[in-house]
Length: 319
Image 1 (cartoon, one colour):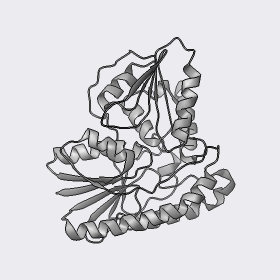
Image 2: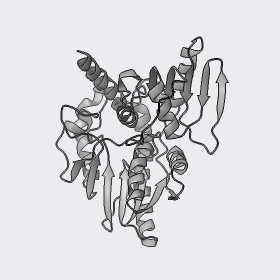
Image 3: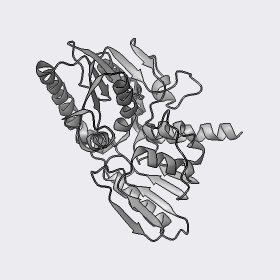
């Protein structure tokens, strides 16, 4: 089959969790086309040389510098609506000129068509709302469900078990869409035998939307500037050539390949990263959750919930 895979460019997480799917499709003899933009496109270009790539513009989301993202998301809402309409038109036009058997959309609302089988990937069936507007949570869930129902299937990258899962309320609180199924977590590290590399005491993995990604990097540089331990900061900025600079005991890399990253994570004494869901799936796949400090992007309610959820789970396990 010829499969079109379209991850959302909202940080690197949607692209990294599409990597194992793309690898499985290739191993099954399928032809894969990836349509993406920005960091997602750069990352997948570096992971797969045998795949055809198309540019599909992202929504162009930016966060605020403050602790609340409500205002930023309201400002971004016209961009999101326009982006959903634009990507739907793009798909209709693409299908007129190209034969595709299946479309796999990772959290892109507009990539459905009655002409082909369309699959939607999300772990966030229920969108966590800020406490001040929690009353609209069920309405937003219904709106999201409307988009999900445009697709032939909804794949949920988590365990079905209501007690032992990675996403908590995000995919287990409300009734599932009729065509939804749990496919277990997706990690680029799954199924790989990786040797630990203990060169760095602490590994910090940056991700997410600007300007919060850069603010997080600056905070970490200040935090560790007087440390005597070896610190690695990975900026999460895929490029053709890896950029590196050294600042005393701190090594900063723009990006590294997945296998090298996994070795550093397994060998580290401490891991610091955002509480994005793809990061959590990767840490779980490497059995590294117990040494990870999950720091949510300020005002991003999904990450704030996941950080608390996994902190609570860790405390319960220790009990």
